[in-house]
Length: 404
Image (tube, rainbow, N blue to C red; front, side, top):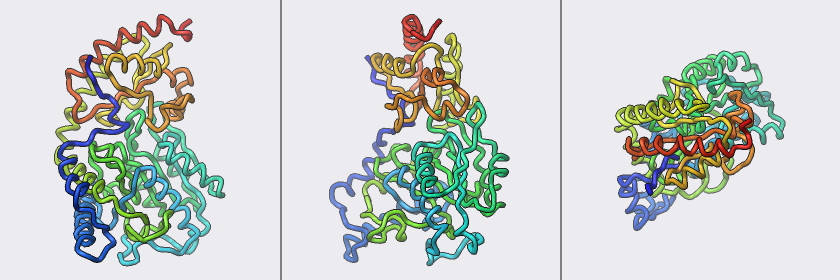
């Protein structure tokens, strides 16, 4: 029986080239980047070279990159840090020139944040918490494809708005948001704009300047790097407060001893993606399109998400009259690993909020399956999935309690 991995959106295996780059920092180069001796200074030099590599992928300046431990941490820092800064006079990066001016005389009155209804749980739950602290939260709806209307964002922005946060590419359905248009509106309205680009980094081009992005989240383990490393891009001049206090690492915004080996791996993963992105995206799109074309020929089977404005590697299907969990289990028994949604919430019994937000009923949402492709996905693996999937669907429908 084969062993096939179709859950690259949940996490990716470490690329051997990344592991090789990390090896010496795991085994011998252990210096603390805050130490003044040669061990520490060597580590500091490597840290800054890694920062340059990561910044280059999103067209940012190296001093605009803050390393964190996860995308969840980056998103929490972005949302809570901006919110807390609304009541503080602390400024980020005093050594840097402000690249953009925001009115600061009334920041203390800004208590309004806008997100979409299809954000990752770490964004959605962060603003839920902020709401309990007295912030006003607007959660904008999306259309049936999972797209937020940027004109709705423009209408929702008001004098009290400090931040708009929208996911770049959906981790569940793959839909890509109109980030550049949203960024332009936020820039014109003098409102900070944050996007969670964890699923987009290394898959599609990102230019934080062209897209008018002020804060951006991305993660190493989504691009064949190690777990335990992520980034938060913070544009120079953006006012933000730290949520971790201590030794003052990362310009005082993320106090914690640097995980240098993981950051080195993250930087190497970024470097590889930057060189191979175009060719790899084209390859994955071809496999993705074959899969979509064939799966929707299965009776009562549908594509979730936008048919065109989507990531090259994430596909979400729904199958009437069966449960996605049962389908995932049966596929696993055939040697195929897939997911019913976000890895962070796939063990929950509730239907996916993202699928409900695009208008699916709870029953339809429960009948959905996420298939995500990656660097080692082959046409042979796609063919095997297409060989076993129809029979599994048919057998599950025969015993389904949902089919009338």
